[in-house]
Image (tube, rainbow, N blue to C red; front, top):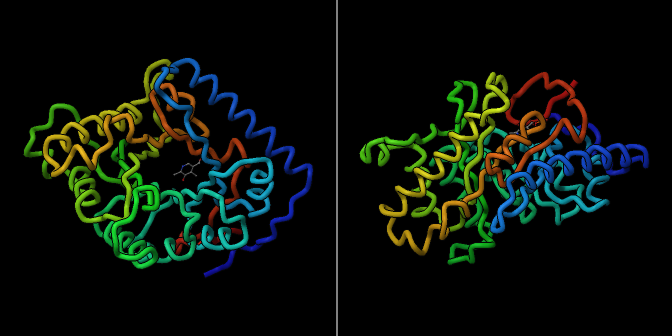
Length: 296
Ligand SMILES: *Cc1c(COP(=O)(O)O)cnc(C)c1O
């Protein structure tokens, strides 16, 4: 496994200023979109700076001006960066999570692992549960100490993207009972006391050739999935009242990237994941391999 080439956390003033300008621009656009739909009860979407394939020094530069939420796609790169960077960074794992890497990410990142955004199978949920239990002990743990997860939903139903199928309006209740999103959420609530389901996540279709004045269909699909899931579990899950959030809106929606975060926010995103607009273009990845970042 190739190590990340440059683990130095030293940056130049120029690079920090460039990153600062970029991220301020993104924050302004987030505020504009958010202010256009703002409701008294809602909170401003969280900005996650997606730093994959970018050096640890870029992260340190943003950390030093107050940023804490960073997103990474490759397990080994994340573990390597977490080791050299401050321990109070809130890491978001947003890449494909193979079940055999569940233990590595939990033990390698430790308490700084803020959320796994890409949970898509019971097998991986079970292995994450086991890994967190062996770190924190088998006993009951308070919700805020559990490992947060989003279930990734493949809203565009493309074969190349991972994630469970979305739920649609009007499905029969027997179809819903066997739906993989329902089964995975039920599994988390009933079998994974060390995990906390924070909400749903989607990448969406990059080529969404939809009319930009209309809502993005991927983001609508994610919102519908949340609604259908909440409605179903509210009446079918044991102890639904005590385990589910009080309202469906308390389940977050992680949606929106550099190209589409503004429409995502207008459609109710709780957190956007922005890379290119902050850090610039990424180097091309030449080999996906086992999750290590291998760059030219
Ligand atoms: C790379 C990536 C992002 C950031 O994409 P940009 O277009 O660079 O903003 C967001 N989410 C996921 C899951 C990614 O893999």
